Image (tube, rainbow, N blue to C red; front, side, top):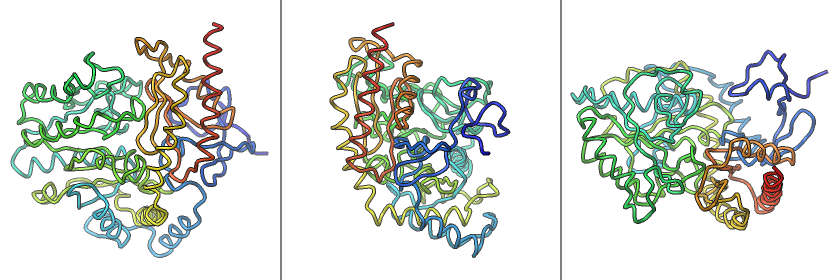
Length: 443
C-alpha cells in the first residue's frame, strides 16, 4: 500500500523542510488539472501559487505539452550545447527575440533561474574583460533581493535566510544597496517626498566602491522578498541612468516576472527601462520541464569572442521544445492580457480585506499579488512568523495553497484562473484572516 504522506523514514530528501513538518506528514501531490492539484488522499486544492514556486502559468494537465516533449524525445533527446546547435533551441531564441524587452536579442538556456543568474553574472564579466575592463568584478545587489541558491546567486541574496548564512563565508564581490520597500522604508522616509532616496543613494555607493570596479546592477523588476512589491515608477529609470553614466550593465531578474505573471510579457515593460541582460525561468516552460535562460543585447554579446561557460544540459532540445509549445499556448490564449484583467479583478476583491486589523495593505501587479500583514497598523510593525505560518496552514486545511513572503501573504495563481476561482479564494482568505484575528485576541 502506498503511503499517503511523506514522513521521517522517507528516502527522498525535501528542500527547506524542517523535520518537525516531516513528523506531521508532508502531502504527496499526484495530479493536477487547470488551477487545482490533488494529493495522495484525494484532497483537492485551489493552487494560488502555481506550483508553490510560481512557474505553472498555463495551468496543469496540458496534453499538447506532453505531446511536444514526446515528439522531441523521439526526434532527438539530447545533443551538446558546445559548438553544436539544435532546432528547438534556435527556434526558441527567435521567439524570445520578438518578445523580450528593449534590445535583448541573444539567448542561452540553462536548467533553472539560479543557473540563469550565474550565467548572467558570467556574461557581464566576459563583456567587461573582452573590452579591456578586467577590474570590473563587483556587482550591486539589493537588501531584500532573491536571485537563487547556487554559488554566485547565493552571494546576491539580500534576504536574512539560513540558506545564505549556513554557507558563509561567501566569496566577495557583492555590494548591497537598499531596496524600494516603501511600506517599511529602510531609510525611514515617505514617498514621494523621499525623492526616491533609495535609488539616488546608489550613486554614493558606486563612487565609494569605485565605478571602474563595478560590473553590473542585478535586481528583480518587482521584488518577491517583501511579497510582490513593485517600486515607485521613478525607481528603475533612475537606476538605469546611473548604470549608463558609469558604464555598469543592468541585469533584470525576470525569473518570476517574465511571461505574463505581472500582466505584461516582462516586468521591465512596466517601467520603460531597457536592460542589458535579463534572466528567465519558471513561466518560460510553465514548470513542465526544467528550463531557464539569459537574454543579452547585441552590444553585450558583440565583444565576447568565446563564452567560457558550460552546462551539460544547456540549450536542451526537449526543454526548448516544451518552452516553444508553452509560449505558443500563452500567445494563442492571450494569457498575458488575461493575467492583467484577472489581476485587476483580484486586487479589487482583496481590497475589503484591509478592514481587518492585521491587514496593512493589499497590492498587486497582474497576477502577482500580496496581502501585507502587520501586528500594528499605526507603526506598520512586521507580522510574526508564527502568525503567517498559521494562516498558510489554515488555508491549506480549507483547500487553498498560499505562501508567505516577508511579512505578507503572496498570491500567484496560474494565469488561466477565472473570476469564480478568485471569488472562492478571497472567501477562504477572509475566513482565515478572521480566524487569526480571533486567535490573537484570545491570547
